[in-house]
Structures are given as structure tokens and as C-alpha cells.
Image (cartoon, rainbow, N blue to C red; front, top):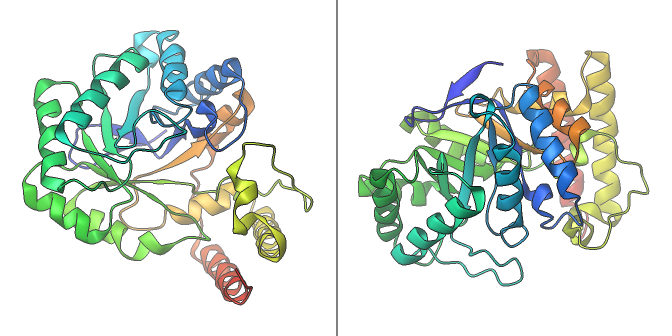
Length: 320
């Protein structure tokens, strides 16, 4: 697989990476640890070279499972490991803080759980109440100490990105939500990243599984799966979303693609986009995610735009 530079970090990543929120069992219901390890190994066997996690996923459990999986691999096959800070490590009590002391302490705790000497990309999970300059300074300390190789931010606005840049501390990547149904960052943050040579990796490119195109009309979510509580996966909005997926799936089939390949491939036409994070629960899903980065012709992309434009118009008319 082709690899792409992550900003100015010196890291090169495959276009698709493995996300571990499902591995940690956070907001996705229960998950078997051995299946998670097998999903990671299968993804790596098929060309994936990075995995994104966070201590808040399963109260540190995701990082421990990722650590176990990579320790079972020879050094030559170990993926780049990206993790986060700023929300603590207790899923039941999300404490948003990125003070200097918190940033340094969270890094040490993540290093221990992951079983590594250095974190390849260390990212603030959400904007925090502390001054960005304080947070950036703490990250620079970790970078200088060799505890991290690159610095990232998640869910930042353009104004916040500008504020970080003004500190003079390196910024290597932005992580933000981006998919056909939620395209906002494609017109603001991603162009900013392209202009400033900052890598951009996006999460939820398949709208938390919906755009895989495999869900039945009577899809049910198990206890602990937060998707079942969200308005986009309930009632008329959910059924209209599924109508759009039917159209996308048919368009994909006409052009020799899966629905997921079409939905991810269109995203990669966006200037400034470096990589997409896709989750996997088992070895079969882990093996398949490497196949998602395909080229989508102009005419097909235009048809996708028409489908999603009509969807957004109709959904906007549905009471929340």
C-alpha cells in the first residue's frame, strides 16, 4: 500500500488506519479481547501500518489490548501507535483537562498501558479549558524528551488551529469527523491543513458503520451501544439515511465497488486529507479495511454528491 506523510512529522502512514474505539468497548457495546487482537493482526497483515486509540476507550482497556496485540508481533511488523489525552482514563467520568501536569501524566500512563517507549502521535482528544499555549508547551516537552514522535489535535476549529500555530510548537496533524453525511470539515479544517502542511486524519468516515451498506431496515443496537440513542439512528431520520445507503450501494455495485469503498474513496478526493480511521471488531473486518481506499471517477463522485445533497435536504425537514 502507498504511504503518505503525516504533516512534517517524518511519519508515513497508509491511507486507512485502524481505530480502536470498538476494541475498547466504548460506546459500541461489548467486545471480545481476543477478537480485537485478531482484528489488529489481520489489518497489519493486509498492509495497515497505524492504529489510533485513546485511554478513555474502555477506561484504559483499549490501550492495554492494543499493547498486547503489538507485543505479540515481531518488531518489523509493529504498527505506528497513535493515542490521545485530555479526557482522563475513566469512561464513566469524562474530565476534560489539558494542563501541563495532566498532559505529562497522561503520556506516562499511556506509555505504560501500551507497553512502548515512545508514542508515535500524541493528540489532544477535545479542546480543553486550559490555554492552548500551556498544552502545546507540555507537548513540546514530551517531544524533546523523546516520549512522543509527533503532536496532533482533535476536533479543533480553524481559530484553535491558528492559535496553536501561533505558539511556535510543532503541529503535525488534525483529527476530525468527516463522512458523506457530515462533510463540514471538508470546507474549513481540511483546506487549512493543506495550506499549513499539517496532516489530516478523519474518524467516522463510514458514519459509525452505516455507510458499510450492510445494515437491515430493522437494525437493532445492543445495550451499551450509544448509536441506538442518537437521532440519526432512530425513526424517520434513520430510515431516510438507509434510503440514501440503498442508492449508494446500487451506485457502487454499478461501478465495481462496495458501498464502503465508494464512500471512503470519495472522501479521498478532498484536498488536504491524509488518512481515514476505520474500526474493526474481528479478523475478517480487520483484513477488509485495507481495501477501502479506491479511486472514484469524477462522474461517480458527482452522482454521490447528488444523493447526499438530497439526503441532507430531506433530513433537515424532519423534526429532531
